Length: 196
Ligand SMILES: Nc1ncnc2c1ncn2[C@@H]1O[C@H](COP(=O)(O)OP(=O)(O)OP(=O)(O)O)[C@@H](O)[C@H]1O
Ligand SMILES: O=C(O)c1ccc[n+]([C@@H]2O[C@H](COP(=O)([O-])O)[C@@H](O)[C@H]2O)c1
Image (cartoon, rainbow, N blue to C red; front, side):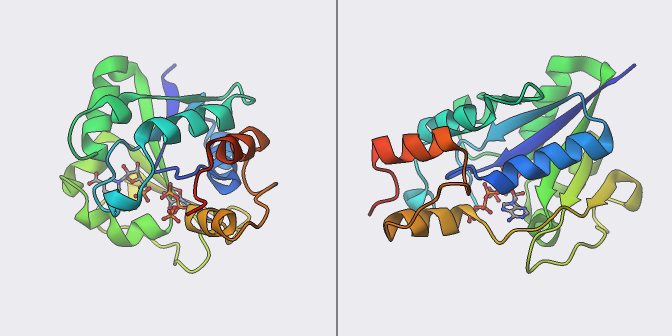
C-alpha cells in the first residue's frame, strides 16, 4: 500500500503548538503514516532581514517534534541554495520516494489566499494533495487553482497563536510556556532569541 506522507512546511520562527496540533489532526484525520516538518531555508515572501537563521529554526523544529514518533524534520530546504519554493521540495520528495508515496501538503487557511503567488503555482496540485486547516481571521474555502479533488479542508480547534505573537511576547518579557513546547521555550531563553 502507498505510504501517506504529510509535509508541514513553514518558516517556524519559532515553531508553536498550533503547528503541532495541525500536523497531528491532519495525521489522524487523513490516516497519514508520517508528517515531515520542513523548515523553509529562505522564505522569499517574508522580510528575510527579520527572519532568524535557518539553522536556529531547524534546531527548534527538531526539539519541538522529538517527542512524537509520527513526526520528523527535513533539512532539505535549509540546505538548498536560493529562495525556498514548495514546488522544488515536492519534486525532490517525489524523486526520493518514488511513485509509492502519496504526498499531502498541510497549510493554514491563510495560504488559500496566497498560493496563486507561489512559484509554479499551477503545478502544485499535480504534485501533492493540499490540506488546509482553519485559522482565525481566514475563510476556509475551496481553491480554484488546485481543483476540488486535490484539496481537503480541515476544521481544527483554532487558537490565535502565531509565530509573530510568540516573538512579541518574548520581546515584552511575557511567558510563552504552553504556547510552544518546553524544549523550544528553553532554547529561546538560552539563546536570547527575540529579545530585541
Ligand atoms: N494559528 C494558526 N492556525 C492555523 N494555521 C496556522 C496558525 N499559525 C500558523 N499556521 C500555518 O502554519 C504554516 C507555517 O506558518 P509560519 O511558520 O509562517 O507560522 P506563523 O505563525 O504564520 O508565522 P508568522 O506569525 O511569523 O507569520 C502556514 O501554513 C500557516 O498558515
Ligand atoms: O513556493 C513558493 O513560492 C512559496 C511561497 C510562500 C510560502 N511557501 C511555503 O509555504 C509554507 C508556509 O510559509 P510561511 O511563509 O507562511 O511560513 C512554507 O513551506 C513555505 O516554503 C512557498
